[in-house]
Image (cartoon, rainbow, N blue to C red; front, side, top):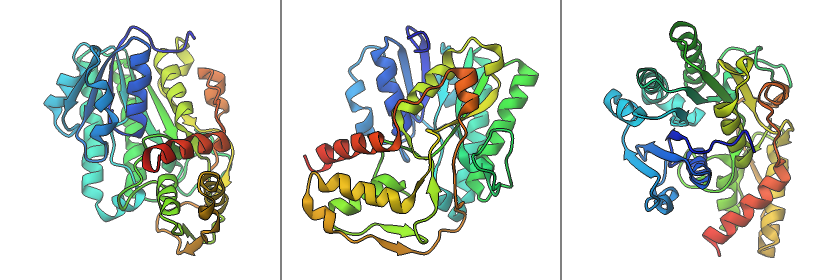
Length: 329
């Protein structure tokens, strides 16, 4: 397919994380020379172990808060896919300083290093958290609200820096506002684990996940392979109108957290019927959480040709199969 990245020199920051490791894997399959930069704060070594023997894969263990590391990583790269960040709204509320250092200062280090290295295209992970307290549904790229967390602020600042770098330095940037990405290799462990792997882990232990609030909050859950497609389209587009802007990356459908928990329970019960008897419990609403999130993907469809192939049901099925084979198989 013409939108796939082939025979290119690419840097993937955060390359040992959920999105980054899946990008590395796909890009190596497509005969690219891939450099992975990760500090392993949230990324996992096992996510990239299989690539270490690949002749076109290079791992740099380093931190985007260090400018010299960023400069080294960008050397001879033509495309940067910047996925490195410290995620989690609750973590940013508890520790805004580290979130700022990694997500804002680290971003500036990366984009300026890319400029210095004459990188052709800088694609970066933006976030649906940028929409903040905007009640508009579906979310459209040019209507945002007030950020509701330090994490959301850092991700919006990234967009501002990218816009300024495009205007002042003539860089080609594309921001991808991810909506609740899930899939293989997503870490189920830790206090700040994303909802889907956390729920799966609880069900596998025959314990109830805790659904915040009454379960009626909703999200636009987005399977990892849709995100891989969006990154490649952003990296390869030749449409001048498609660069130096931001896009929603989602499927374009909403699922309540209660529906999500029920779907995971029923899907896992096909592997182990006892899981079907696990009760779903409800807890308090999390501070900083937005009630509903649903993306319009019209802009990405129109300008990038983005066409997500996996809806939430198919994505959950594939994810459940992966977790079952890796944690119970």
